[in-house]
Length: 265
Length: 330
Image (cartoon, rainbow over all chains, first blue to last red; front, side, top):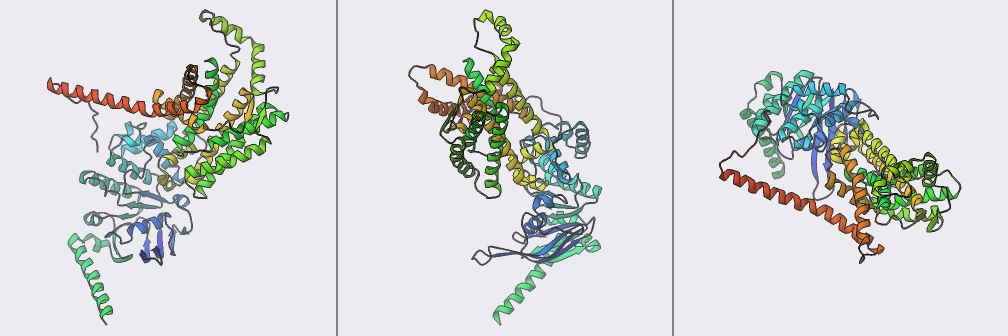
């Protein structure tokens, strides 16, 4: 469904600020795969997300979605295949527009926008039904401005807006990181439900190892622009936070040692 | 006073254009100073050349649209900052307007214009006599009601079309582009084209208003657009302060109201003996400044009174919070 082929990206090449963000990422997601991505700051997770979404373009390598090479497609063209939720609850919705207008915008992700009325009675009915699945009472506040909603409500709405049109690929970029633990838990539960309900192919970045272990059928760990560890199926199910930390120490520790060996010889 | 309302209604169309760029697209577009004159010049030159005044006004609208799209292209494709794109287009239009007119002023006094045509048609109907009779007890009888009524209808039509457009799928994407631009791209809308289209539409309204003002005033002048953006902003800000702007429909009403109120304030100010016509721009600036500051002062005082009331309630041992919604909030 989603295929990344030898993706590399360097920022500020040739200057003192040069930063190699991605070093040849290869990753393939089959339909229905739910992959969680963990890694420390600067590991390249966000760069990877932005390259898949088309906000950044890779230096080398290709992005394929559903059998199409989308590497050169602009972000808004590629968005036909991609649903995305950002870390910042303010980023995924238009604050001065109503809930139903935001939903119309999301509804038109896969369609050509016309000069027909946006919020029709039929759509409003459908939005109401869909919003009920969030159990937040938003279905009774269709004409409320989104800016009046709390961070948790906005993030739940963003999640719904990104998924209810069944994207080929769903990108979740630390979408619970800015919420307090209770709201984060609620949005995590909603994510689990919605992804299962539509069987969405999902890539989720998170800082929360426990969340990364609990969700999805695959897990990858990134560091220094590379995938350094991956687990799936039974192996993933049996992962614990301690094991992950050990694994990280083992891989990075040995590399550190080998770097030293190279330098000292 | 009566004239102020007439002029206010025509300028309201310009103000609606400014509202579209300034508020909906969140794009402070200074093209307005130039495109207003472009509209006036195109209409004036065509009318002098013998064209139908209605066709000439429509052509002015298209010319304004073209000017607006150019500003949009400078910003989106040329990656030039919004203010600078507008300023560059404004200065370029000054020369273009001179080229269109061939001189700095084109008089229209002897010409058939939209205004004279409507007035002539209106007088056949005899509505003036009816309206004046109805209002005879006030002792108020204007020259003709034709301009006031026709311009009110025209402005309302423009408002209606704008309101409807902002509710369409494209309109919703356009508003979202002004509200949260990065998010719109993630829902597969091309923000560049939305901004170009929005600015085109905005300047089309501005130029159309310019064409009507030229026909109303009987001339087109290369300097008639100076400070037009401030007048537009004044209308938007006064309107929002007085009438509120919760939804687009409400806001467009407010902008029309604001444009008329602005003209009335100006007319009243000019009656003060000490002030001269040259002070108009200064008065405009003062009106905008007070429209921006006064609501804040009011709100602050209201908040102070509310807090004081709360403190008194607490002292008397009354409950502080009122009834709240029964939804669990997250």
